[in-house]
Amino acid sequence: MSQGTDIGLKGPVMCIVGARPNFMKMAPILRALAAHAPAIPALLVHTGQHYDANMNDRLFADLRLPAPDLNLEVGSGSHAVQTAEVMKRFEPALDEHQPSCVVVVGDVNSTLACTLVAVKKGVPVVHVEAGLRSYDRRMPEEINRVLTDQVADRLYTTERSAGDNLAREGVDVSRVAFVGNVMIDSLLDAREHARPAADTLVAHDLDPGLLQHPKGYGVVTMHRPSNVDDAETLARLLGVLAEVSRELPLVFAMHPRTRNNVQRFGLQGLVDGARIAVLPPQGYLEMVGLMAGATVVLTDSGGLQEETTALGVPCLTMRENTERPITVEQGTNTMVGRDVAAIRQGVADILAGRGKRGRVPELWDGHAAERFAADLYAWLRAGAP
Ligand code: UD1
Image (cartoon, rainbow, N blue to C red; front, side, top):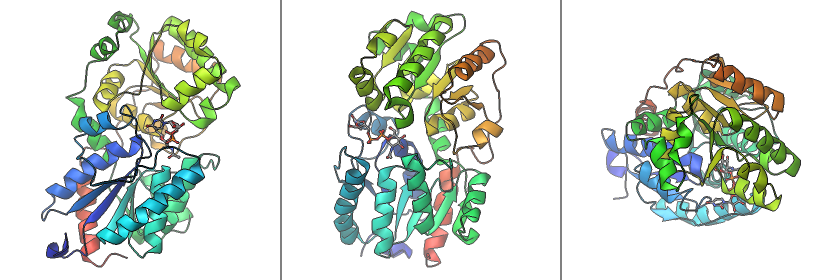
């Protein structure tokens, strides 16, 4: 008997991860599928889009993700190459395992690639974190979001505005379910095991005294191509961070794309001359510990905007737009773009005690994955699309 048929499913649920931001979403989903009564069999497929130990293995351990059942090992490449490689390698896996559906999360290239393969084979596609829109089509993630949502069969949203976006794009509301934010399930689960920020610095031979500043410390992450691929923009942003660090010491967990570009553009001096502790990409428990204790988080990440809102830590987002408006409307997030004056002002406001306190959005309560699993099972049993 094929996995799943004994509980009335056509086969197992095939869950896809590719890159770092997928892992914190998939971990609670896999646990909720296993805890559901009856247990829903799942297969974990890793496309291998992210492969560094720092971007990958440590996060798997921190999030208690099981080893993938399959690793497609696609690695890096242009968007076309990466997407095409995932598609080529995913197709035979799909044929072999005959799943009842494919579950994709977020907006990375692997999300879209596996979606395209599955829908064309008539396998139902389920998208978690559907409907988010930056309305900026220069972002590769925005293309991935729009296309995935157009063809996916069941769409799970994290905030109500996402449902409105889908309705505007002509998506039938009967395909959409608002279950809350599975990434916050991971955050709440990890918070009590988070690694103290001082330990993280010590582990990298850095002086934890940096964190003892009367104003605390700030945390920085930055990896969007729009911020780090252009030498002049990256120099400007590093310049303002160096300036901020004179007021508030910074801990910068640097993505490989950013690190490569800092070297390539000869900008290392900007960082070396500042009160900035540069770390490699961090594990999840380290990142949660760093964020939870921070005075401010400066970032261009999607996930950190949500995590800081859930933690009640002020966040300055170095982007022109956000696909997560609830973090600005209800949470602790302020958009500062790449505008040096706005970044300076944002930090000054927070240091003066005028940072946003915010509130936790609806259904960001640590139980989103349970609601997802219950809905998915009912939907599959009812015959899916
Ligand atoms: C991807 C996602 C983005 C997400 C980000 C988080 C897409 C379109 N983008 O962007 O949404 O916010 O992950 O990290 O899918 N690299 C390594 N080691 C790795 C992975 C990548 O060195 O383990 C290098 C690659 O060689 C490449 C660069 O980092 O030069 C970018 O990696 P890539 O996966 O193409 O996209 P990200 O910028 O990480």
